[in-house]
Amino acid sequence: MGRNVKRIRRKNKNLETNIPLTISAQFGLVDQRDFFGRVVASENLANYILLKRGEFAYNKSYSKEAPYGSIKRLEKYNEGALSTLYIAFTPENINSDFLKAFFDTTKWYSHIVQVSTEGARNHGLLNISPQDFFEMSITIPKSDEQNNISRIYNLMNSLLSLQHRKMELENQTSKAIYNYLFDKNKPFYFKDNKTKKVFLKELGTTYSGLSGKNKTDFGHGKAKYITYLNVNKNTIANHNLLDLIEIDKKQNEVLNGDILFTISSETPEEVGLASLWPYDDTNIYLNSFCFGFRPNSKINNLWLAYELRSLKIRKNMYKLAQGISRYNLSKKSVLNLQVDVPSDAEQNFDSKFVKLINIQTKFLSNERNELLLLKKFLLQNLFI
Image (cartoon, rainbow, N blue to C red; front, side, top):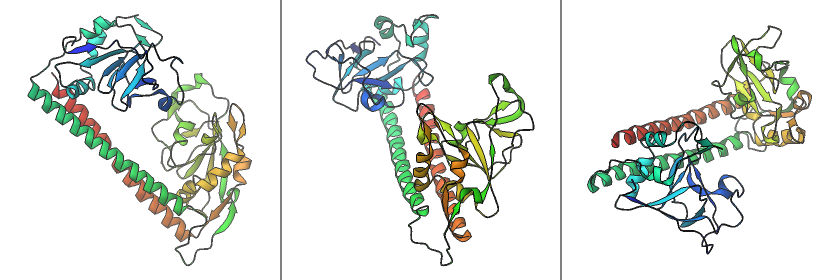
């Protein structure tokens, strides 16, 4: 590769740029202030590499997403300052898009494996010299084939960008519809609507999560254990993060239709989040950072789960969270929250409407995943 790229050594000595760069495996070369929310670089960027748009950099820092580091091209800014721990280079006599596509595959991993021997890792960095890096072997086809590969690669990226934009618009639309459906001041569309304020404790009963469990209780047994990770992200609880656990029957089993609450977290935003458990699994239990709520027949449990995630309820939840380094919420305070309960007809309408929105969102997400798989397949087969 060293014959087709040139190493960049230029420094930002005149402070041509004040943008401190980092490499994200997902987002490429980005401003540290946007990625980390702060600057992790030195205050003086004069000794940093001055990287210009279209030039590449290799970050030797490895992670689960990038087991051999990341190689990305600067595209977001005209210039940026980069730590000298990175290896920077610019293409010469090779199509830049072709090179970018190549580094988007795993084909270059084998070379990194060869030059980073066992035990050469230090503080999360792969110990690879620039000389070893530039000795990487790449099969470079003729210009026409490079251009064709580049066109296919750019087309796939354009399709993914359009899909991402479509998902963003869908998310904005869904959020607006959701906020409208669960806005207590909305105009009602059912003549028989008789909204009334009801304390949550009037709509069901509660039960506590597990107690006294430690690490030795996990990894065996037939029961499954729900953590706050299953609950905090979505209104429908995540079914894929269950841990096996040994348990006694004195604990409270989670049943289909229960609503699960997070009651302890390091951030107040993650406290009091409610998720519906719509699954028929048996031997399912809840951890001590959550509690369960079992709605009675007076309420549509899916409607209630979405209502409990509504903006007006969440604002009240924030006020109830107590703590400094860790925030906690008592069951009693949650049960004393008031809920605006509309007629059965409106509850059913709202919950069905939200179901349709969720189906559309899942469809778009599946489309995106299929495009990503297609891109990965094409890239792995376009390069020898």
